[in-house]
Image (cartoon, rainbow, N blue to C red; front, side, top):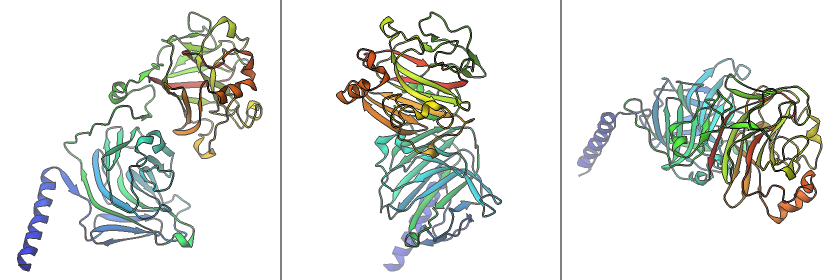
Length: 456
């Protein structure tokens, strides 16, 4: 009986292997050895235990990676991952690369990483650009999936890299959707995160059932409505279109925009060229020479996303619920709730107001943005702003994928803030049922692109 059981088990393993191969899947781990893999960068340890690759942290080691000998372009990757403690961290590299001279000669792995984050932040399944651009898709952009990863048990991971699109799942729940053109192929890697405290040494992460498919790829559908980080300027995927997104700027014309209090787009002060809609440095004062530009359409509840490029010391803003009524006509910029667009380090407005409520991504003169410096891209690089106004008047501001403030439009707390702001002279400021969206001319050189909106 014992001999028969062994033979039966061997037959089952063989059948499973042949079935996987016939369906196009290839195993990247034989369950016994680390053949086909090599260690790069840090000094963390990898070994095979009970059919799993086990990575263990080593004190004072940098990030360490076990990477495939081969590189891959388009693929679907699946595996099961277990992490045992909320103080741990790990990740899965895809289409990644290695610079042996990087990190002061210690070696640098760089490229997109599927984040494994069991901490209270819960960003597992998000996409991080290891060693290069930092966060591309914080999992907070899809809050409904932030509880998908479970600590102490195996989680099934799926990553699709097909063309410019990378999508992730945890336990069959869709998490992140990134559109990016930087890498078309590279190796796959398993990370053991750096630790610099002795008590964190020896923490383990487990990887098993690692398989890949590179031919006859069929993308799995994503539920509608998940936010897409789309790094192709002025472009919408078919998925975004199906979810209700539309471009407010086509990258070629000023269609859909007019000057505030005007019936056409300004003849001067603004340009549309090279895929950008730009306001130019002329006066350095609110109102500029071209004046603000607004959407022809009105919006009630919406999800608005936009990229902006500041020049040193520049000031601008994206306003919403702009009414353009004669009672609210202002000598400078048109009146509305404002997502502040500002160089905090050089423009004096950052030091005015109360508690930083005139800094980048704040609700101007009302609520300061709570943001970490690491999530602010420096001058010369694009930043992404996002404003969500829900049908119940709950409002959120985001900067580069991270929520920086929220409030309830029209609430007593909101009215109290208005009463001590520059807006107190306007009746029921910010409470209009609908309004225009606005790009501000503050007399400084600022460019916008990838302006997209979805009505809620």
